[in-house]
Length: 113
Length: 113
Picture (tube, rainbow over the protein chains, first blue to last red):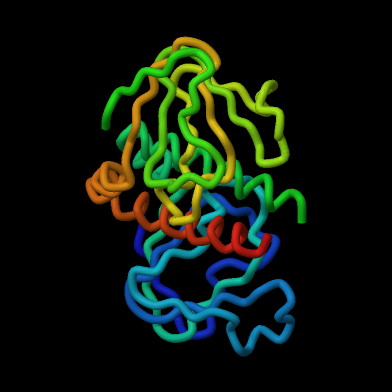
């Protein structure tokens, strides 16, 4: 896990980028811009402290589907796929099993779109 | 968590039952019968040792959508919603966060059907 700072307006990741981890908002605000949002001015979703984004990056190998930008001076914590796998390996077997089932199901649903 | 034995052919839960926990197959085999399977003879899915079923029971309040039956002498481990919540409360904050996001998303998708 790694802390990263972004200045206002900076892109954290953009649609089509390789996805290999998730982010947790520390301080500041992050805007998520859906693929249909071409202007990238008004975010579709705004996230604040403790909120997670980019989580498909730890359960899927597909590229980023949306764009994430810092809306103000922002600190995020990056949790790589490897970090996540390690946390999961240390979790209860039932938690691991349910996570695997939910991930599979969402991957399936994603593919069908 | 609680071990429960089922004789061959016995119903573990049926479509429409209140759902308040998940099951893990210990010994034996469990058949899952989809709502469209009215004869309840040939299962749509067959599960064996360590496989989880009825997991929507811990992330949703909707009734069972399928029927589960023991196909042979079978032992399952029942994990109530409360047991699951306790396991989750003892998990890493990132695991908890991702589980909550995936659960929300599947609930949303379930509702839209």
